[in-house]
Length: 622
Image (cartoon, rainbow, N blue to C red; front, side, top):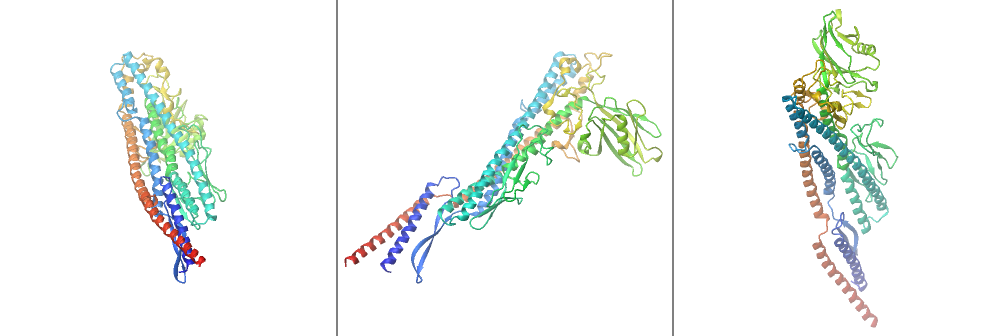
């Protein structure tokens, strides 16, 4: 080897060693830097005439396992989803109170029924009456407070979505910018490796917010899609848009129709053609924090509100609804007369008939509707899976009602008004196709002294609760936030016992106290499947205490299941992080060993240069 070749080889070795020293220094300096990936040199020999004569740096390699990285991002999305759900479920559990605790809804309801039992035993006792009203007010106030808390949780989810969208847009923008920088950068130098680290950090941030797929392209480019296939970023970033609403109320729900929507929706504006996609309507985001916020805001917390509203509505209606069987019309045609005087919006007429040709029984629930915008009504309006619900616009009077009903049933059965406010339902006469077998009418009692034990104990703010449906939705929605004890009852507690004034009910009469206690403690009732308890085909049927126990049990079970899922997912994520870090994180001891090796190589190359200089000097002297 000539002196010139020796000098060139030593200089090349020195340069390579210097690069290695700089890389070790960077690794050690960034050992605790989040997102930093350990880097190593790629070296290759330079040859001349088939012999190795030098060395050079061919690139800088990031030490990571891309397969584990993909797994980690997928599990991170699932982990943040599970963790956020668990946090919300735990907060919801705190709102309801621990079962059996003094502050729980179950205990408050039990205190109310205990006070009612004491009243039934001593109806003339003024303190017993006061205790009933006091316990009822505490129950109503707790329902009001629970509604406020649940809607507060929904508002937190709405705000969380706003924050998540801002974070996602920042990550998408930076990923696109780094893609553009990498397109013009040297793909193997230290600067490119640093850019790759930065981009990975933003991709990791994005994976916490939503489920994503990362597709590697040419020149270190990446394209990112949702797991459902919608592109989020390439060389250009798409933008997430969220039209956050302020205060969230029980009536504020998500709907694909903007006119019916009371909360924000999430859309994607394409960075390429400017097109928009509603990510909620398409269910494009299925994991990560954004999916968890959407699930809690639009499903879990809405269902929790339904449970409270159903409790409040059943409390009110079980005490104020009075059902009267129809008066038999012998016929022919045979049927029943019903007095519709005093029927309120939401009150019902129920009848059954049999198709004589097939001997098939049918059950019909006619619902008074005063707002035509609410029509038609769904069969799911009632908990009974076997009835046909028919909403009738009552705003045009009884004549219009008859026209609507006869048109609906095509004279099978027939509807008429023989006199006054009487609605007659009869079979189809000589045709004998159907037989009307039973009929009844249910009205909301609005007077404390109607002569019946039913009474308007609980009100919707200051109005009777009759279960009406309007164009903006059922009256029961949000009722738990508005329910209160009838002010007239508070002003005159004797009405807990006195249900008529002519003749005057004796102060020791137990009729009304027993009625109230029995209705709220032992009467079997059916509850809407919208509460998440029971199904459309088999709705939950039980007493109010049984329903409340189901609600408390379900909430506790859901919170425990969410916590277990979060803990399990956390273990998976931590295990993957450890596996990833085993390759990607900096081991300072290893770097120190490399440093010693590089220092030795540096010294050897420097010595060669020094010896070559001495030899050249000697030649020059000769």
